[in-house]
Image (cartoon, rainbow, N blue to C red; front, side, top):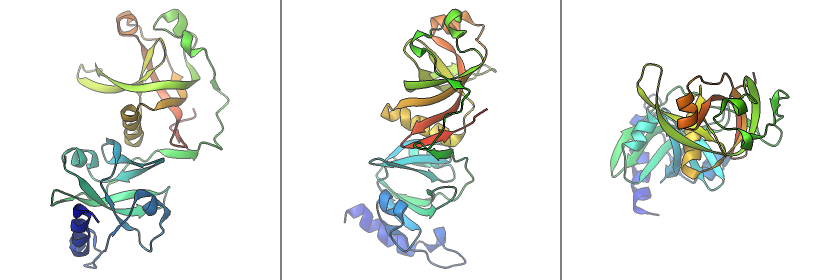
Length: 258
């Protein structure tokens, strides 16, 4: 057992003030993410050492172990993770609804104990990708023929369309008030679309997809063609889209059908 894990086991036995209930001590058991998900131990309290955090936003982080990825939730979790550069261990509680995810009670890094605590968060709606039925109003279009030119964008104007093999990146832009903001971008062969209207769980997934350069496969909703020719033709951005649904790690992340 590595030095850090020896330390966190000792702390876990003494840390009732962080996760105890009415003074009752709670013991956290060290295990892998897979072990915690499968709940093979007779507890819902676990220590995940050196978690592979591949994306985080607000109160939600995506932790990956091999082909398994799960949501971790905690108060200001993104900021707390970013604030610690040292190797860390997360003390978590397994929650079964609406699907298995984990509440981060506290974490230990470089000998310091950082209280996190429960927080209400917008977990994405997930469906099994193998049984998901694509809504009929999403259509296939020749996405390689789309460009920032109005003539080609008319193909998808006010329509829902399917995308396969796109990449997700980020771009710095400005909002309606002129403030600088960072937005996610769907990159097709000849045009880009900025993504609008997501929740923090989806934002965490999109950050994970950017980091791992994962392909985007899903349904997008396009509205009106932007009037700004400079934005379209100088920057290659054909406007904004909303995500209807997309595939991630064997699950379909569903934002909207209509």
